[in-house]
Length: 165
Picture (tube, rainbow, N blue to C red):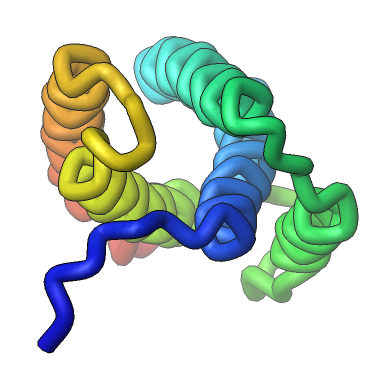
């Protein structure tokens, strides 16, 4: 096993582009959720969307600092994928299914866990990437709070999701 810690900028570019693209898609989905759901859920989603946008901008600044290029096609593909995901049948023609917020929050929780893993990976390579560990630790603390917040919202949605109307 090699202890070579030389960074391959091509791999870093791919990795950061993937996370930036995912953040763009998640932000779009969360903003749509904020517009579609009740006030309590909408307020939490709007706040989370703002945080994701700031984090995506941070990723883009890291890329710019390393003179890496954002993959535009990955961002476009994730946006298209997010829009296609809206087309799923929910068993109701003209009204929102009570399952929609539950399923979207579950998906969001998975995305946040992926983001947490991304911050941990960047923390592992922070010296070689010349990234401030204080910033990464703050991002890790933020994502932990975000995961906790989504878990609390999931508790509320689970109580409603399968109830007969």
